[in-house]
Amino acid sequence: MTSVSAEADTAALAMRASQPPVELVSGSNGGVERAFRAICLLAILLPLMLLVLLFGGALIEAIPRLSWDFLTSYPSRRAAAAGILPALVGSAGLMLLTAVMAIPVGLGAAIYLEEYAKPGKVTALIELNISNLAGVPSIIYGLLGLEVFVRVLNLGRSLIAGAATLALLLLPMVIMASREALRTVPRSLREACFALGADRWQTLRQVVLPMCMPGVLTGVILSLARAIGETAPLITIGALTYVAFLPDSIDSPFTALPIQIFNWVSRPQPEFHINAAAGIVVLLALMLMMNGAAIWLRTRLRRRIYW
Amino acid sequence: MTRSIAIAALTMSIGATSCGSKGSSLIKVDGSSTVFPITEAVAEEFKKKNGNVNVTVGISGTGGGFKKFCAGETDISDASRPIKPTEVEACQKGGIEYVELPVAYDGIAIVVHAKNDWATSITTEELKKLWEPEAQGKITKWNQLRPEWPDKEIHLFGAGVDSGTYDYFTEAIVHKEHSSRGDYTSSEDDNVLVQGIANDELALGFFGFAYYEENKAKLKLVPVDDGKADNGAGAIAASPETIRNSTYQPLSRPIFIYVSKKSLERPEVASFGKFYLEQATTLVPEVGYVPLQDKAYSLATARLEKKVTGSLFEGKGSQVNVSIEQVLEKASQ
Image (cartoon, rainbow over all chains, first blue to last red):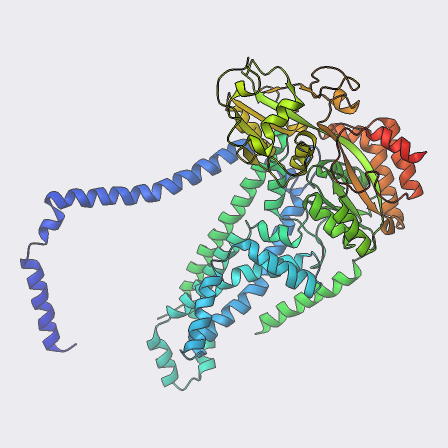
């Protein structure tokens, strides 16, 4: 910083200090400030309260059914004996396979767009499409999955077809989150790396990727947490409702938690509604655990980064 | 890098093991959500006796179920109405022959709010006047149906237009399948209708009988008079008995499973079909439906054993006023 600009800065500071902005904090504007703060506080409290209300309501209803048996039993016509094991395993398998497919492709696309692609019309078009795809309703992905994975690729109505469909659904979100993360790596670091004689691949591999990993993983886990609640695309590609065995391979028929919950909610017997509430609690707990894992991973990975 | 290779190897190994586990001991059932609870119950019991046979049940609706069935994707199709001409054609194209087995009765209850003290019965004529497409925006008050009923608005609730219940109700009441007024509160989820009617003193609605049975305290059942004396004179209230002996007409209907003839060659499918009909009398009431008379199950079992293909209803879709016992008996002669 040159002395000229330093002087200019000091002058500007002095001017700011001598002028009346102090009034902004006091007087009539203070009321506006307080009101705005109150509104903002309300905006954060309202959704939180709704969440607590919903989760609390489901939890209170679910308590009589929440037990180890509920997690480890197969569905049954007797509400009290019914459990969510196949749905739980199905959802877990789906998430695992989805992550295995979505992360490499999504991260690869993000690296290409951020690091390699030359800005131009084609790149702009791709970028526009990706952000548009993120807003496409999930049922459309279900229809696409039905045609491409179930029929053309002949994967059948299987776990892998479901996971591939969900991976497609997540890709735009994973790409966007990964790009955001890549952008947080300061340009100066890359330049320093190049200056030391590293090539592009070495820079990426040893500097950029380790640094953006916390951001990428957070993005991926958050989008997976969204995918675990998806029902429409799974029903479209033909996920089942009653499965009394565990998926033993990637082309096994399967069911998932939201489908099991929906089935119980629509039954006439109130005992099944309790099961549905218990299923909702399990699903929400899973989501919270995934979000928690995202936070844990982020802080853990960040600790390894030295500036 | 090594990690990604490990993942690839893992995926491949999962893929490789999957080929071996695909035995023939999987019975695939799909179709109506109405029939689902019965098939689920039968599958649960069947699994207890035949541990090595896995039964899967999906819910894609009667129509969606037939699509998969006629494409040869499933072994058995759950259906809340008889097969329709277009579906018969699709099955012919797919080369799928089927054995039609009635498995239970489902009643459609006409229900009002618990505090409604005027609607003690209703005729099918009045129901038609209320629900036909021409009634839209015109029949809006109770006293338009019967002068002695109050001069108050009538609020209608009914099954969603994608359900088999709606198809059957319109066929039975309006005499034209899939045609009714549109200005009513509809839901595919009968529990939503129960809540709606329970909270509205001026409500009238229709939905599956099982949903009334579970919510008796909040609702009042309206007996229906079809104006015919031969199946019980006067207004008849829906109950397991009146649905079973075909006096609650026209709002009780048989529901079915369709078994692919080709799949019947597999012994486990044949024994599942037989088991289904054997167990129906005890399992059907457990899940809230009304079983057929014992004679009907034995006639159906005979059909299954002889592999009699085709529909008893000539593939016309929903039909009203059918006693499945009579139809089966006629067919067996």
